[in-house]
Image (cartoon, rainbow, N blue to C red; front, side, top):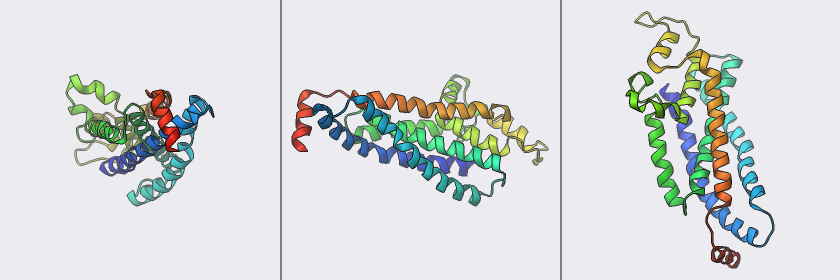
Length: 227
């Protein structure tokens, strides 16, 4: 479980951090081209979101295959595809989250501070450091809205949610995963919907914010002069 958490979080955080300076540079170009009347905000926003899809798919395929084999997971097609699904959409929502934080902040430095703060909170409430059964009841609401919690839920459930092998306490792996972590095989589809939903949510939030970020006529003229 720790290796699953680390595998997704490592690349996800790198994606979120590396996309921020790129968005900052593209924003300046967008100011110039919008001021020149070349295109409106909508195609820019759509292009910014769509261009990440094939890139992250290749990244998830290469990284997912290597990690899946090295971890020694069960060699079945459905379990491998579930793992690839959660890996892909996790990388996707991390990337779109990085774009969103850049869209609502004035520069990459502030965006980095903001996103890093939430990365730490996501890890804390993901169910890995503190499982759901041990999170105080007044904080459990954040577990249910934490993207990494649903990623970990899907990764663990798809691999061990149907495992009936007994542990030392005579509980099966399936029962232990259910009672201690709160992961149920019946909720695998729900986890998939939530992980994909977070990707869509962050993409929708980043697009209009990126295109409507507060700019003055002076900023647009300056950008035109620079280029």
